[in-house]
Image 1: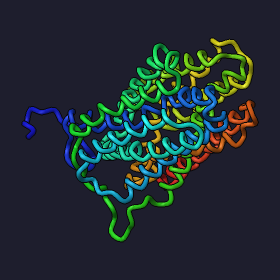
Image 2 (image 1 turned 180 degrees about the horizontal axis):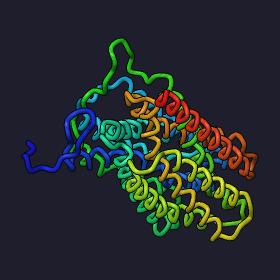
Image 3 (image 1 turned 45 degrees about the vertical axis):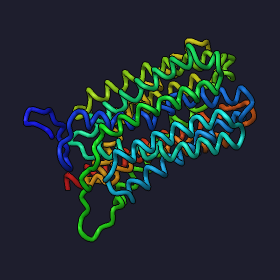
Image 4 (image 1 turned 90 degrees about the vertical axis):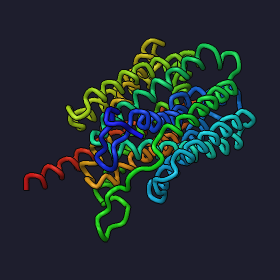
Length: 391
């Protein structure tokens, strides 16, 4: 039972949370998405070992993300926010087993194991985004979440780079990934066991209105750009005449920048408009993608991926207030995280269709195109909102 002296975190919808409950909810999201920070080197390692092809990197990452995103979306629409502690604990245990199963497979078996892993990942992410969507300053809590997430991804990426994959290859990497799921079982019992229902106007369904769906479409495009290119980091390095070790270095250095991006987003939450952030990140991505298209020195490749990493995490938290502006009921906001996961799934899948043997430069054009499409949708939504606000 909380005492009057307990610190509490004010929610816009539902009762306040204690710091312990908030930490548990955010920690489950870290467990769900830690794989996303290292999947380029894990799947790249499988490709280098001949267990999947270069094109399969995009297809496999896409199908895992698709499984995760669909699970998160269906949970947001169908599940009631009850008995969440046990749900989180069981999801973490299942994720541990599916990550271990990946080490025993190749070809289609890798696809099956990663698709299965996407289901518990999606449930864990739903538990986290449900807390963020109900908070008074969602972009700030999203910034805290992304900062914690990338810190976890950085620690795992450094371990893979320095100790694990040079000795035990891709299988060692997936065992390390599996071990990250075990602390989630304890975190699940720190998290809230239920959330208050989101408001639903009388006569309306639980689905977002049209403008909410349009905002989610923009999120799908905009957030997918980084995944469309970043998933192919190792083949892009090879095509630039660089080694797998350079790609792994580029990954962990990028994650350092992502920690800075998450901290920056937390500091800017509630102070800077999302369109300013989106314009900055668009310019950053286009500059990085341009560098990836040429044979460049290792330092330039690493620097470009560092800039892209900073932009990736900086933009994420601002997708939530953008969605809330388009749909004040916050029903679309609850689906924002699953949409971002779907973006991370569908974008690499689409980009993989432009891979021609060992030539992966087509993914750069794909990523640039969907990035600009997403920015255009956000601009139109904001202009529509301003027009009606002044009418």
